[in-house]
Every structure is written in structure tokens, then in C-alpha cells.
Length: 330
Image 1: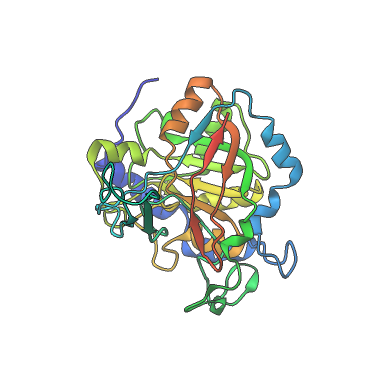
Image 2 (image 1 turned 135 degrees about the horizontal axis):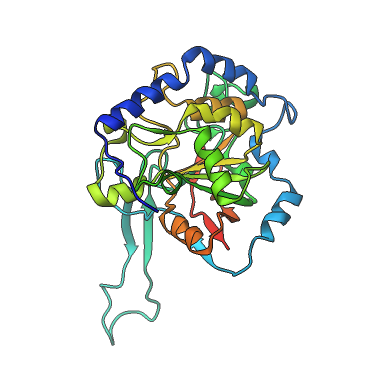
């Protein structure tokens, strides 16, 4: 495949203008209502689009395991600050081995760690619970935003709703591959025609219950040019024009290799439309900052872009999300 440049110059500016004009605030207002799943699975529902992941669909996904090859999809949690990681994780040793010497000390010698991290934001692969975003003082399915409070946390829509794990068919849309570029420009977005091209060229169809992974190549770009502030410099991600497709296809989880938004924001009212409409109106579960580089390489090597995908959130009481290490199994 011939690779084309994906720089951030004039072409990037044109893409940015196109992205800003793609969906206006009035259309997003309409989608906030027409794409809503409030009441669809009952007034007490807290699972949202995970309801699309039925036992039958999980069983069908398990039949995609043919070779037994696992591919990890989590970014490495480290402790340094960067332009795109302003709140690095904390780590210190509660107990360590540097105090022991041969022939000295007690028989029981151990090491233990403390970890603390702000997982929402950049740098940590995490799943967003449905308590992560609000609209006009409400969460998904009409619960009041006050149900997420200090100091308790999320008394509704806690991530513990997914305590059994999220297991289903993963579908990778490798946008740089189908566009013939190294990565998607920071000022560009992924649109429905990208999904359609991937379906045609890679031989799959996004179906109900699927966990849809969208690779923009941002991590590959980061390795080449270094980290940048995504809010200031731009960030490739799903364009809001994808929202009707996600609803119509009954996607259970949307996964991105960045924050699952295109920056800079097109308008101040909908500064994060995938989260605002996806989470609050649709009850869509989002998986942010997934490392898809090894996954994309493996999919290309075996010639298939569907696989069993496993997301296992930590059992966090009253949590608005969780760090995760997603696994694709071929």
C-alpha cells in the first residue's frame, strides 16, 4: 500500500474546517433527543448499551478464537509528566528489598506498592461509566446528576454495573490503513464513510453488540513527533457524525486510541459530543486511550479484523470508571 503524508499543515486546516462544519449545534440538539435510549430497557436500567451484549452474542464472539493468540491493548502506566499527561500516576514502595542482605534480617521478606492515579483524561487506558457525564443536571436514563456526590461518588451508574466484565466481538476499523496514511491528522475526524470503507475492504459489518475499535494512529504519531497537548494542538477522533451509526448498529462499546473526541471542539455547547450524547443520551460505554498499534499489526498479519475482546473493569464501589487492560484474543 502506498503511504501518503498526514501532516498538520494546509491539508490539516482544511480537514479541521470540514470537521467543524460537519454537524451543527441544532443537529446535535436533535440527536440528544432522537438517539436517546432512556426508558428503552426500563426506568431502572443502568447498563445502557451493554444490554446489546447478549449471551448469544458473547458465545458467537468466543467462536472467533482460533489460534489462541492474545494481544494486549493497554497503554503502559508510568510516572512521568508529559504534554499530553498532566496528571501522572503516583507510585511508591510500601515495602522493598533494598533493606535486606544475605544472612541478615527476618525470614519473611516482601515488597509491596502503593498506586494512585487519575484515570479519566489522557495517558491511562480506561472505561467510562455512565456516571462520568451529565446533561442539564441528568445522567443516562434520567437519573439526577446529584446521585454522583462528594464524598461518596456514584450512587447510580457506578462502574460496578460491569463487574462481570465486558466480553464480545471486537471490530477494528484501522483508519490510517484504509486511507493509506501513517496516521489521521490531528485536526481531522473519523466519519461514517471511513466505517463503510473498512467494512468493504476488510470484509466485516458492524453488527449489534459489537465493541467498535477505531484506530487513528495517534500513538504512532506520538512516537514519531513526541507528545503534544491534545486540547491546544488538536486530536484525531470520532466525528459526531458517527453518533447515528453507533445508535443504528447497536454498538455496545466505542473504543478509541485517544479521548474518543475530535479536538479542537467544534462548538462550546458540545465540547465533547461523543461523551455528552453517547454517554448521557444513548448510555454508550466508552473505552478511551486504547493502544491499538500491536492489534492493528496483528490484524493485518492474519488478514482479519474481528476477534474476541475482553474488558475487565476493577470492582470499584461508586466509581465513575476504571483503568483496564483490554485483551483481544484471536
